[in-house]
Image (cartoon, rainbow, N blue to C red; front, side, top):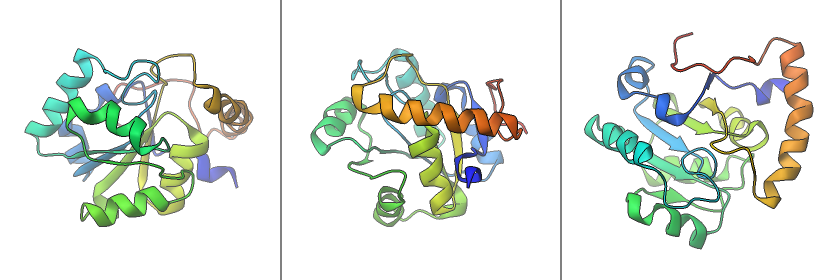
Length: 177
């Protein structure tokens, strides 16, 4: 049961994912959560570091698609200046949003990875759908009110995964196994 919460990789930040490493793993497209993964939930404008990372992905021709449980209005406002395609109301941990993204953008499962900061939604949805996933540290320590419940449950799951050596206490800065 707990294996569906086990990420393929654990990396400090989405910004630690260079296109060359993604390509070596056969990854041609990055699906990403929005809040606390791509941008801080309380800073919808993003950072220069984000724009630099997105530029590298664009130059490497690795599309980045936002898959978020947030409303259309919230996601559209957050990604408008970034020019990123998105799927809102994804209903993670279910695979609905991932299926929509795969179909809409003509993606293949084996070439796709989902990056997110939550075991209960992001990692679970990727595993439920059968794609690889990268768990990243949340960009900020605080969460929106609706995420606090997930974090409480996530802490229980984390303890179990750590006990079973299926989750690391160390955050990596690359995808090297």
